Length: 145
Image (tube, rainbow, N blue to C red; front, top):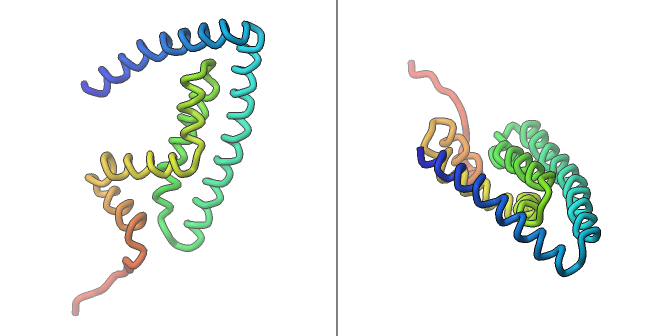
């Protein structure tokens, strides 16, 4: 229920913020430059999303090749998708949030937050916690005779 309220408020407030910012920027630099700037940020965002997406995918594959669970990469992938969706949404506020998702240090902080707050309480979360934090854990099996 709490998530539904947050989503409702987000979908209610963000369009007003976007319209306000578009009007303010448009009154300073003009209508055509504002539209051009929105298109430019979407294009730049798509290019950066592609770069960061491939980099995350490569880290994911390298982690699997080394026998590790690529915990952060599994969380960063959806963060990149959300960032890409925000960048394709016209407006300056959503572009700012989308670009934040593309910055590796910020994306890592978001992944840390998601792992700590939402994934570490589940069984799979313990895998995230051990692989992401403690590289000295040795996984093995034994039989008692």
